[in-house]
Length: 213
Image (tube, rainbow, N blue to C red):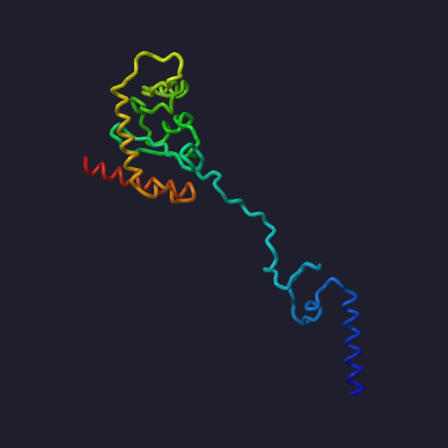
């Protein structure tokens, strides 16, 4: 018994010496079997036994409404659909912006969207009223049928009212589009998801108009 007690005492002394030599290491690391090869780990008081348990130091991307075609306007928090169609009201292309975005800056983009066909006229509402927009249309050989705002200066006396009446057809196309509940309420969170729903709804409208023509 005395010999066994002496050996235990010597083991305790060696263990105390090892712990004193490496105060920053954990007891579990000291008592680990030295015959098993252990993966290299950084030393220090923050080292953990499981490497996967460390906190993630990478900064995550912030989520939110930014760049999701959402904005606050007089009607509330909404998305604006800029729609381009032919004179028969069949949809050609569309573009999404936030509800607070203006119509006039999107005019040039709408002319570029869709098939490579130059129309003879561009019919739009007063939201697209701008000298730059009319100049862009005329430079491409397109007759702009855009009414002037009430506070516009140098308003011409002539305006193609008969041609402008055709704008009612795109308003009818908007009415058909708003019949789709997911479009009217914007159930999708991201711009990509909402654009897919709008494209699907417009494809249904286009297919129905072609088959009933």
